[in-house]
Length: 193
Image (cartoon, rainbow, N blue to C red; front, side, top):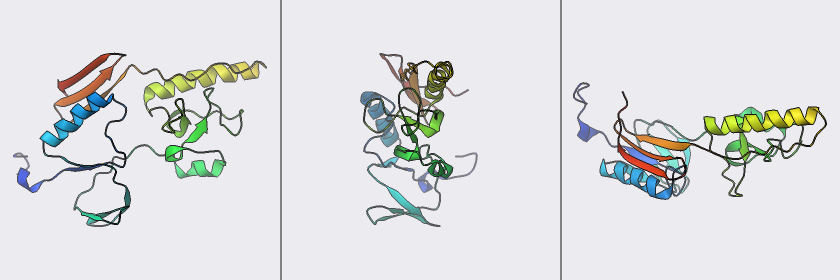
């Protein structure tokens, strides 16, 4: 901040989250550490807050209130592109196309949907698998195997299984929270060099 001659007292950071919790890919204990770190460093957190429109100098919330700001950085989750609506296939959260564990559209088993635009609802929560490279790779392997089985006239038996080696959430330039493997939970100083 000194380098750019910005007075830190002139800056206020507010994180606005539609969900009731932050960092939902992490274990709640790990996510809570990340949230405490943000609060400790002066970040205001507004949870359960839906943005409905953005103006030149304010944000409108679903509850009718406004939030004044001159700078907005939008980092919302991944939403399927609007073109997906034209396919006429069932969609779930974020406009993602609903698929079964074999990677097939719920509407047509000949249509396979992969990656960020697909939603495999393994646990019935409606949230679907995390939109990560690991999930896309796992889905593509399942689809490839099932397409090969279908071409040879066999039943599609390969099923998507969300196995993730872990998640790391970097908070600022020197702190991170991580859940790696099954039981490794880390938080603290990290280097971004």
